[in-house]
Image (tube, rainbow, N blue to C red):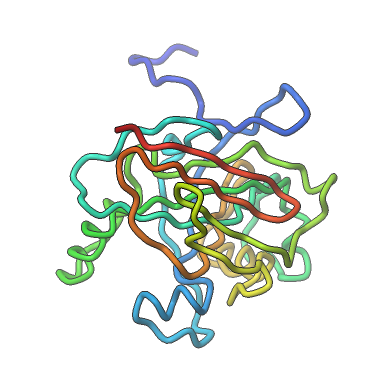
Length: 229
């Protein structure tokens, strides 16, 4: 098949221990999925239904990259997250079957232009441009669930220039991974290749040109990216 324009390569992530790659279809992100982060953003952490926003697949940035500081912002923020990679799709997936749809896991950053997001919220407008911009979804190589099972607890943290800024535990998620998959599949039909960024613990904060970000999730991996001066 020929296309009328050059669309570029399919967004994909490497797989730990192999040469094959995982194709990235859509990126769904869960908002305010840790109580501490909900509080620091001025919201009640009660267990309300989860909500979601999206990033484009080509916002993926590989581990170890140097990233250009994004345009149109003076308040870029870091948000470290466990990334869930789906190998099977489906609609209305029961919670008890949800993990059967997971291919693997990674460590990601939901980078946020907080000033754009905040202004959009004040005006009652969508805030996709605060979230779904170029280079806004750094992610490690993926680890197959067949090798590490399904992490439900363990440390998650982020350092900026060697100083810990975010620290939490996967067990602190308000909606855990199977619950999140099940709920999201009631809103859209999930597809193989979809990624779910599962939310961030408290401690989000600003990133400046030249900053080095180091993220970690126990049993899943380590992510390092640097912002260009």
